[in-house]
Image (cartoon, rainbow, N blue to C red):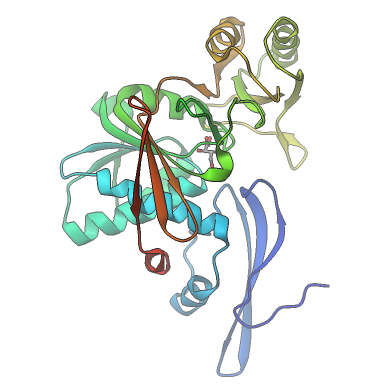
Length: 313
Ligand code: 5RP
């Protein structure tokens, strides 16, 4: 049985920090109210909640991994300037960034036009009053800020844990600069520990999977397993109406050839390898310290943010 204490946060289950259910309780005038939040992708709920309960939620301790995400996100908005056309990533780190951005735009009266990489991010951004338009309206962007599932020392990424890789890659390609907001737990020497998401059309997806598995036989990878991404007994359908195949490869030797060959298979729409797209990797930690990798020069710099700001977002 779950015991609920005042303002205590209980995570009932969690998968990769991206899916879970939490119970919070709140006591006012001896009446205990409690709230159960079921959420996907975001670590923090962004649903509208009554202000006292919101205060209660925000005063609860954030886990170190959530604080690290906040730190990277908070620092990343220091790159945003008045008049920018900005791409907004998807995921729990990107959600912190959207919150930090909304505050910065309010505080500094900035004029920033945003393009979201998913319906989920678009909804959050609009709810927070950001000016959101389509990529077709803007065509090119100054900057995109997005999370990642894995990054290597050369700034290459695996993305798509939140099933938004297709729009994320289009937006990254349309942007002059890409900032990746992340924490040190996602750093690897060689990409592949995180299952590589591949977005495929629904028609004939099982045939596409067989063709991918055939390709993997001769690919420079350590393991070769593929699975249709399923949630609650049904295939996950992306914003663009496709399925996701997750490839467990453990280590990917030739990322450039794999991305090229995957995308040549009929039925494959895009894969989650982001090569030569990131300009800076912003690595936050739970204390508010930030390391910034400049991918081009391979130089690392340091900064910090005030983690108490998390309670204001
Ligand atoms: C969504 C993504 C996300 O950026 C990635 O899954 C990281 O998510 P989070 O910030 O929640 O850890 O690629 O498709």
